[in-house]
Image 1: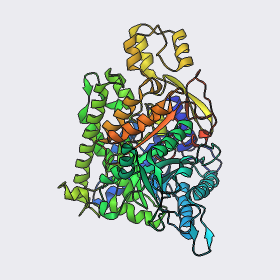
Image 2 (image 1 turned 90 degrees about the vertical axis):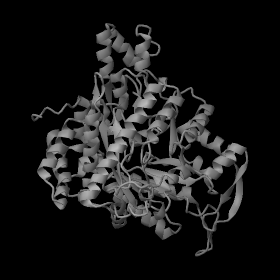
Image 3 (image 1 turned 135 degrees about the vertical axis):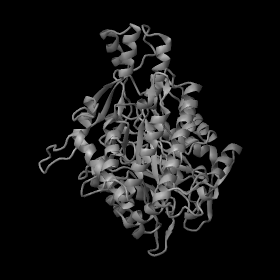
Image 4 (image 1 turned 60 degrees about the horizontal axis):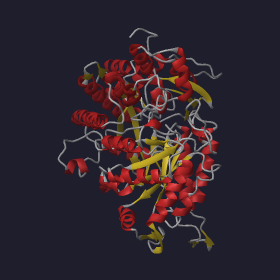
Length: 597
């Protein structure tokens, strides 16, 4: 591709200049997008030297895939590859032990991860509940929620000096005695500005819920039952809080661990900030996404190109494991032993539009599952090939894959579906597996400055069908959706249905279809119109469990005063502070999943 021919939209160039391209000591941009991709390709290809490969040849392949916007890695790789910092992973989980020293060690480790460009997840379930005894002092414990606030304040301070804003996931088990306080923690919207929250629900709780019974609350310090809670009442509280502010979501903890590829190493208790990456304590993961719009053809999908991109993506992400720096020694040790990577997708909604398939259809759900199954199969084949030349990951023997008779793999996990917030802006496609949010909308990035985005496939279809006009486009821009515009044919309205037009069950079914064939998890927000009820939220949470999702989150439009994506002409109501996450605008480690992304 000739220099200067990278097919970037004006918004993509704005985001790259503001956040990704290298700057000198005066803050002046000293790198072009082409140079950025060459920097990243060369740095990641250096791993080939360790295995007798040709770094130059592989760097050319990496550069071509990125410069054509066929594949992009997570933001820390684009920002830090080939720099002194050299930290390229997005997702980290840090354990929080039940001691003051351990808690503040975790705060320190969080700071180091955020400083390097990553996002962190924590389970606070091991902390003794509020009003429990502190034997060393004879005092009374303040409980997990009070310590979550400590992490939040530390993040607030750290982010002011970093290139990326830090973001966190906070998890508490449903059987923790402080679960009610946790559920309500973000309904006061001036608190926990840098956290997403998820309740880790267990099979035992879900069984009690199904039977309309109570379940035990357990003090993690003693393992003793200290009370009981009505399962329905707890779900009602979760639903009410999520309806109000988007938090908490749910993590289906036992489902996550049933699919844990390394159960002999312990349980997974938390995920990265957007929920798509369950990890063991001190584990990290690097992500990358294939642009599905670029495998669309007039007669269907270019499966050969998709296979090539999946295999190249696995090689790229495995190389990152070889050449990146790690902010914490414990993270280096665990990560290098398991070598988890997360290859995913973006532009799925655009692919469906290109193929003439409405998002809210059985055909779309079937296609989503088929695509992800193919990517995982190709990714595992590539990982097995790397294992033959580079060796399998250290803990392969005795792993789930070993017990199931799979060939030795280089990576404990291969696939993840992330929201792809800013990398989808760079690629100029829809984010992750989300439906198109709106056909014309404002995206709040770059310190709150809005970027207007429109949908080029709709413009092309309107012109092809002969109903395009400047007046029509003005009306679409005002409404953001086609559903009430009489001049547009019904089949076009179906094909270009936006996130808020689509019934919640289709959102959940799509997430489940991808989850069935994804090693890690799937980030998916069920976007709800402002008039959605609490019963709608409850139904979504139960449906997600029924269909085998590993987690679920909802966002009711306008429940926060500021949100990452907003539709012109559609008022945003309520109070909130989601704007704090929008500078990240990032899928893998930071953009709040309650921002309608």
